[in-house]
Length: 199
Image (tube, one colour):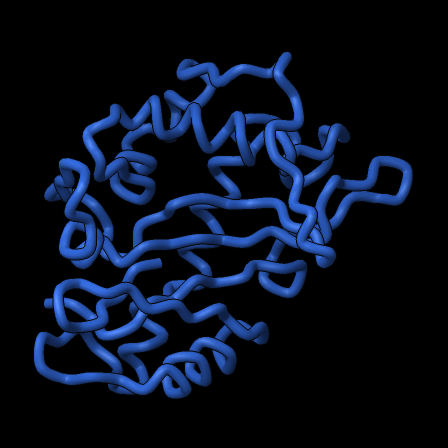
């Protein structure tokens, strides 16, 4: 079954991301936790080969992106810190379920892209910071996804995947806001003649 709208959840310090002390300030104002509704991903994608692995979680991570309030979001912050697959071996089984590549690239290619473009900017140098290296970046994203638990939150108010029921964006936004204490960004994606859950 598919959904009628998309949910993109903004994760701020109220959801669990702790800002660093002033002497080791991050390059970002907040982190955007981006999760995609896996059953709809391939419905909207027509230009690229798309496959949903059987073990993929329904709300599947797309990334944890550092953002600035002025929209001048940092990217590619440290070319001297390349992706190292060995650094995430201990969490790889969970990553393969919760942070899946749908477009034919290997998961390591996808993780490398997310790390280099976004993860290197999320890192705060202090090792006591929540995100201080590659492993903690991926662990933090998965922990936030689990805390948000959008599928359970929406189900608790009767919003469940359906091929025939359309939900109002306001109902989804209100349910997520009440649960998280922050207002999510709700997006829609077109799949043929209908709107489906995207991210």
